[in-house]
Length: 133
Image 1 (cartoon, rainbow, N blue to C red):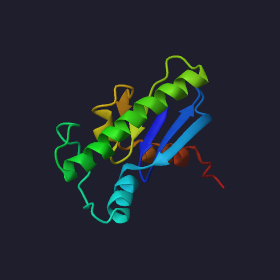
Image 2 (image 1 turned 45 degrees about the vertical axis):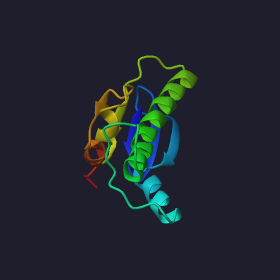
Image 3 (image 1 turned 90 degrees about the vertical axis):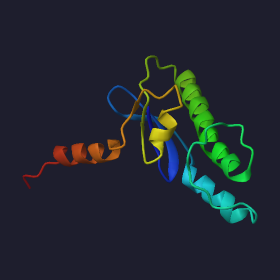
């Protein structure tokens, strides 16, 4: 399973051959943050970082806790449900994307974080191209 924490957060289940099986798409962390400070007149723009505790005592860390810990909770739930419903055993979960490292540190369901996974995939596709034409 590949989790990509970009503009959208995507959860892609692939089989042993690499073929796409199913996917889930949710708003990305930055998109969710932007919606908070643009659509709620009194909420400030905040840096997306993991606060030291989910027990926030003021607005900024409260928003950060909701964004980051909310994403961690979503990740744990979506991964568990996708594995349960697919019936697959021994699923390896790989995360990528700019904010994936922060989620990887906390989400026990993620086995590996590789920030360069998308670029590696693009290179692999390029290398498989028949360039003799």
